[in-house]
Amino acid sequence: MNNVRSALLLLAFAAVVVFLGVVLGRALGNVEMGVGIALILVAVMVPIQIFTANAAIKKLTRGRPANPNVTKERHCQEIIAKLANNAGLPCVPPLYVSNTRSPNAFASGLSPKSAFVCVTQGLLDTMNEHEIAGVIGHELGHVKHGDIKLNTLVAGLISSALLLSMGVYYVSGGSHRQRSKSGGGLVLLALLLQPLVSLVGQLLQMAISRKREYAADAFAAKVNGQSDGIADALEVLQNCEKGMTRKDAQELGGSTLASMYISFPRFGSLFATHPPLAERIRRLRAMTIDS
Image (cartoon, rainbow, N blue to C red; front, side, top):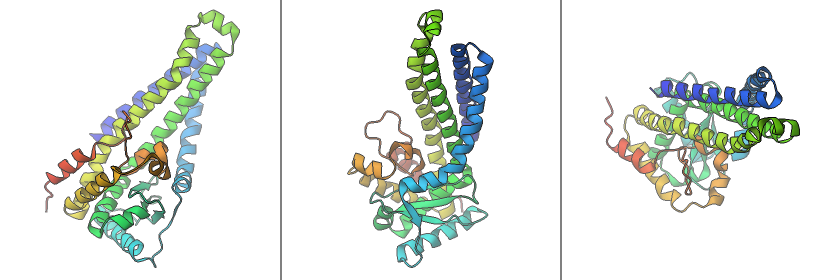
């Protein structure tokens, strides 16, 4: 059902991109040209997002390969190897460590063979191995379910839509002839498009991410054979987030990477990329794992 819902949401946003192409075409005086530009943008932006995502994420989070000579990092590597085997992954994702003090983790990569898991130094310092295993299981769930590939596709569509909305604004706002023809209507639409596209993009990311976080939590419980590890880890994150500042959030990569992490503070945002931690913990505590 997650895959069906996600596919429908992607189709809906793809329709938004085509609509923006039509609007741009009207501003240019050629609808076919506008739709063509929209399709070309998607064909360019999605591959760019795909091929640059891992490198950009490592740079933003300052992730480095784990050092097996460091006890905690070696133990974390051993946990990944064990759970990757339990999950039936074709290979063991390498471990990266970000020297960020806030406890957190994420996975990246378009396939199990290109995936990696990154944990923060704060997570290694704060959590015990039982809790770390819960977190790793969650991240491997994202790898197994193809969530990272989906998020990359969503990011490419959103980037394309934002560029199209900017194009509509500059073309319609910069042409006196077009303003006189449209009576200002197209110019007004152009002014509204960028915030509307940004809003719809956030809603799309939120709708996809929130459901898939529950699925990754359940996967963590399954590969660990119990739900206490991931539930306990989420409680640690819940307590730590109470003292987090916006500076701490920026060290994690800010809103750009918010949807990738196992949890991310809202700071009053109406568009949280994750379900409430309390609800995730409640579901896990009520879960029964089949033997």
